[in-house]
Image 1 (cartoon, rainbow, N blue to C red):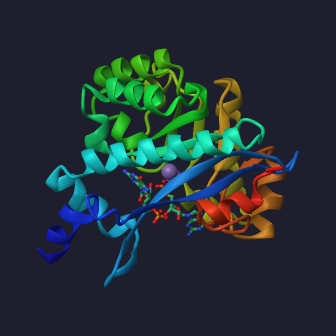
Image 2 (cartoon, helix red, strand yellow; image 1 turned 180 degrees about the vertical axis):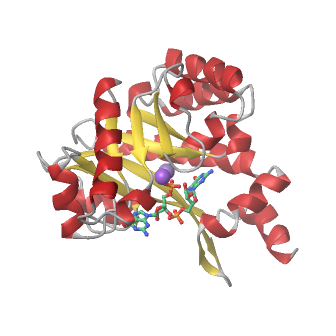
Image 3 (cartoon, rainbow, N blue to C red; image 1 turned 90 degrees about the vertical axis):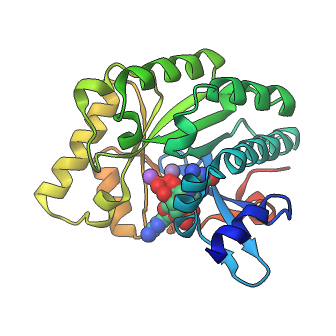
Length: 253
Ligand code: G
Ligand code: G
Ligand code: MN
Ligand code: NA
């Protein structure tokens, strides 16, 4: 209950901050994009992970204004990076189920793109596969509207939970993120290798960008490369960092 009261004031007290984690193409060494990850910097609680408050924010509906703040802040930051002369970089923003279920989501995204003057294709929206599978027709309709705006769509945590291939082909999207549980377990085991290999091949057939998440070791990198998975994200490359620190690994003149 106390957490809820504090969360109610977090936006007006400017206690949220976005961290950014790079997505690397290991063949070229280039940063393909960055994922924005929300943090709550509370004076007493310290740095709170969204794992501890996203559910509460969903239950109270606070995720809607918080989510708008996240979108606006990520787009504004990317505009700043773009203006500093770095090559085009896509920023990925996570959407919660409740945000995705708002029929005015495309309108909100369009408004924020307009206000921040960010090129639409430099914004990617990450939606968990399980969220998309809840109501196929609705998801199809909203994704089409978002696609029309020119933003990219990423399916997050793919292959965990219920991710139907039957429905996948109906959705317009650009990126598939292999759930970190598969990467975490990845060893020289034919079964682990077969799953990732199948996902990479699926991505190629669908003409998608495939990103392996949660990469923490050189062995995982070597195995992923052997499976021709070239885009990776994880602590091995960088932990999520505040914008000032993240700017250090961006090729800014
Ligand atoms: O950032 P962290 O490593 O703690 O993320 C924990 C969980 O919170 C992940 O499932 C992540 O997708 C989610 N998350 C992080 N940032 C945001 C955000 O801005 N909005 C939503 N809805 N979820 C987020
Ligand atoms: O649900 P989503 O995939 O958006 O969650 C991303 C979460 O994964 C964030 O909480 C982020 O901090 C975390 N994360 C990023 N890289 C790694 C990693 O290499 N290992 C682990 N365990 N978590 C990671
Ligand atoms: Mn994500
Ligand atoms: Na994920």
